[in-house]
Image (cartoon, rainbow, N blue to C red):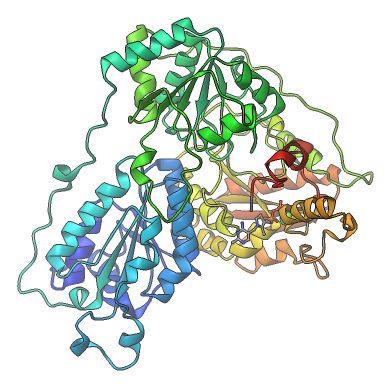
Length: 588
Ligand SMILES: Cc1ncc(C[n+]2csc(CCOP(=O)(O)OP(=O)(O)O)c2C)c(N)n1
Ligand SMILES: [Mg+2]
């Protein structure tokens, strides 16, 4: 390693000490000092740069990585404009409660040091304000030594549950400052994430007392860890309490969907069966459910909920004034400010139960008849069942699934079987998050599969170039209904409410005439593009070919033309929720 000679060398050394393996970035003059230090002082290793074609992708990649690892990855964005591009991805990471460390830069705060024009463009009075309302913390350190402390603190804050994105803005002056002598790098071991709080024994006893008296106990799983030990403990607890379990599609797989205690199907909204079981329950344990109050009102409407409600969540530490992603305020009878998986272990311990769950037989998932109007047309149900067929026998991680599918067509048996959503509903996040998740999955035996809507794919597809350029194997399947179809469902609702022609719902929504060539767009970035596949009988073999490519290390996109429709379990919500003003599907 060359000698530490510049402010940004010290910053780069700190990044290495903090164990950042990758830095997803788009370059910019505002951090040319840091860029040079990563390349020439660190040798572009730990962290290694992953060049991105859009700042939104850089942060989305870090987000996707954290979905798998629960650890922050680094993203670096250029001053002002780069950060502006990145804002939606910050918002998604914030709503999804994932750790991400983003570095940015500013022109010299000291105006006498600014080069004409460009440095003035690069400088704002309070750059962090752009993202402050949806980050856990931000800072603009005033010296190289202060930057080291700032990075330590940023990483510690992002990694401390509840997780979230953080932003550190590095003044170009401190990056480019010539150091008199090397700055000692603090030892990260003394700046670790604090120990998790454990629930008081009295609270554990009182929760178990409630469950002992319960006739119909229920567990609502929300933001849980992806550790297999925690997954097993969850199963053991549900079995010990004989509690039925509901999961959340937004979070991904948190409980085996073929377990006898699971109430499914997994989906973006509460199924009729889950609503029924929830209404019958007399004790409900919410383990950091994203929208406990919303779930209760979906089941009980305006009626009083008589069940005893127990909650374990740290989320209130993030509740602030700007965003309302914290959802409606729910009644809670026993309210614990502890991490949900911590409570699971405490309860099991108090029950004196082994943490391994009883092995259960996998129930055969329901396979209703495929739909689709024309003989060979791929209806949404035929599509999801086609995925089941194509991936049978493979250890798949569904990084993403499109909103319109019926969760009954998927069986989740491991925390990495499905990673859930993007948190903030940002269309265009899918490709970037897929690349980040695939990067983390490269360390596992999982086949990384992202099933994306065509709208999502088109908005973010140049993120795939980063995967190709860095040999990150990834399989993308585009559920191509040639539409921002979610909003056709909304237009249908408007037409029904306003007595207007439903046939016009597609106007301003269809992505057709011309239909973008998804496979060609993939090839344009060096990926393999297959399709369009428009017949059911071709779908499975096309995916089989793609699996081979991805196993050989390639990025492969399969364009599957699906009918513009949502499964009734999703679109049906338009009618089911008419009493809430007929909001349509759960995405806006
Ligand atoms: C950045 C952004 N713009 C617009 C929307 C509104 N919106 C929600 S879902 C959706 C359609 C997404 O289309 P696609 O990915 O093809 O999925 P489909 O609904 O067709 O299954 C749109 C435009 C959004 N959520 N985010
Ligand atoms: Mg679409």
